[in-house]
Length: 365
Image 1 (cartoon, helix red, strand yellow):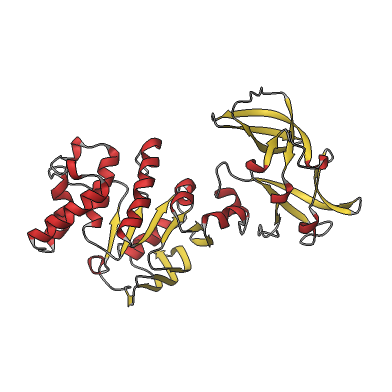
Image 2 (tube, rainbow, N blue to C red):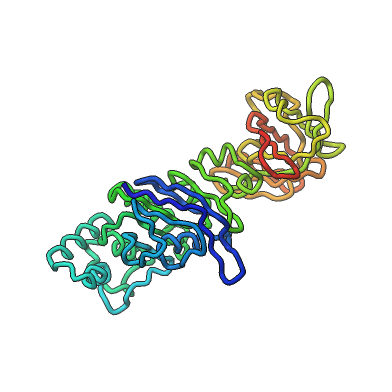
C-alpha cells in the first residue's frame, strides 16, 4: 500500500508563504492530477513530495514513512520532468539504464528491466538511437521509461506534455493512461491544462494561490463546482458566469440581469436563494444551445441573442453572444453557419443551472 498523505504542508521562501497548510490523502494506485493556473503552487507541492524542495511546516508521508527529512533518492519515487533531461551522448538504452547502473544493479536485471519498460512504451526498436534521432513524443517516452525501470512506489509527473504539439499531447495522454494500468503504481501529475486533468485523473486537485479549492472526480468537479473559480477553470470552453439579482415575480423566483433579461429559477433550485439576494449565475456552453427544434424546453427558457463572434470547430460551433448586455457563449452543431451580427434563438437548459453567492463566490446550488 503506497498512500501519499500531506498534513498541514506549508512552503515559505523567506517571508513569502506560497503553499498554505495543504491537507490531502492520495490513495494507493490512484491517479491524482494537480491543476491550476501558473503560480498556484502545484509544482512546488510536487517537488516537496519528491524531496526536491524542503517543507517549511507540516508532514509528508509516503507509505508508512514520514519523509520530511528523507533524501529524494530514498523516497522510492520517480519523477518525469517537462524538459525530458536526457543525456544527448547516450542511446535510449543507456539513458533508461543510467539510474540502475548508479545503484550497481546487476547487468542481467538492468537488461530485463529496460527491455520490459521499452516493451510497455513501444521503444523496443529505438533502444540504439540517440535522443537527437527521436521525435518529441519518443523522447518523452524515454523519460518515462527511465522512471519505470526504477519500479518506484510513486510516479511524479511535472507538466510532461507541455513541450509537445497538440496531436502528440493527445497521443501521450493515451500512453500515460496505459502506463498507469500496466505498472500499477500511484501517479501524481501536475498540469495547467484542465483537459489533461479531466481525461487522465481518478481525482483532480484544483489549486489557486497556494490553496486547494476543491478535490474530486472529474465529472464531480464539472457538474458540482464548489465555487466560481472551479466553475470557470474546469470545462472547455469554461462556464459562463454572469452577476444577477434574485427577484420575486409571478409566483416564482427569477434571476434579473438587466431590464431586458430575466431568467426563471427552477422550483427545485429556488429554496436555495431568496428575493433581493445578489448572486452569480453559471451555465456551461453545452447547456446554451441554438434552436430547440424538438420543443423540449419551455419558451421562458429561450432568449434572442446577438451573435458577436463565431468559433467553428467542425464537429461543433461556439457562439459568443449578447443578450440584453449580458455575454453568453452558446453551442450549435458544426454544420450550421452563422454570421456576426445576426440574431439567434438561444435555449438555456436551466436543469443544469448553477447559482453562486456573489460575495463568497461559493456554490449555493
